[in-house]
Length: 267
Image (cartoon, rainbow, N blue to C red; front, side, top):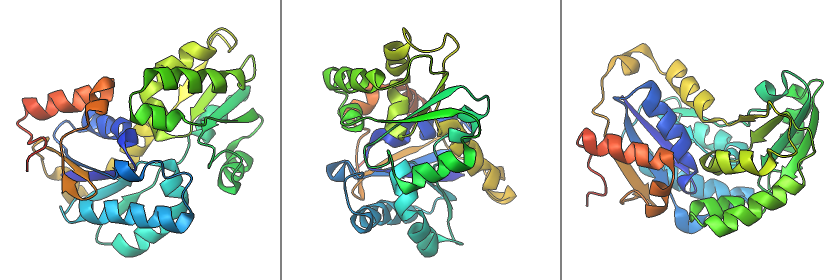
């Protein structure tokens, strides 16, 4: 079984690691275009072209499913990706975890990129799934880029700025960008002093991984993979980025790949 994931950069690591946890034998294809990152400020048409390029490169390796491991790309490009690739290739999008976060009510903060914060898409999700929760949208300028480059100083600054906008007593934080899941614990630490003692963080990686496996046909699920890891940057086979190894998800994928003989960065 082979599953591909696309994103502008290393935001696809959490979902890839979650897939490996659920299916240790899965072959993974990580297709991104870091030079085009961030995708959020791009026009929908431009973003869609970049997402299509990453998806086409991954599709050439004949995966059983393609995960769009990017919230912004799921908003703007998912329909186009499905129109081109399905039914031959199953395409799974990413949705912010607003529904589970709001289920218990309380104060919910949605940390997202400036392009997503306040968007009609996110406001629609809040209206549909927010329920009785008191929902606050928190824009996080520069955070995804700081995570992409493993720039801890920039991460600290961006997280501190977003924490200052997060209401006291917040009970749940939705990590509305896949990059943010890589710095979940620094986010938790930054708001711990003012948040509810039982603060919960909600990412999308586990749910997206489970959804991908749930929607795969039985014959694909029955095929054992070799736990290989293929990394594509703008369609070219590349090493796992050095920034990826700064995060637990990236280190886990590298260890698993080497342990099982995956060809990392082969040319």
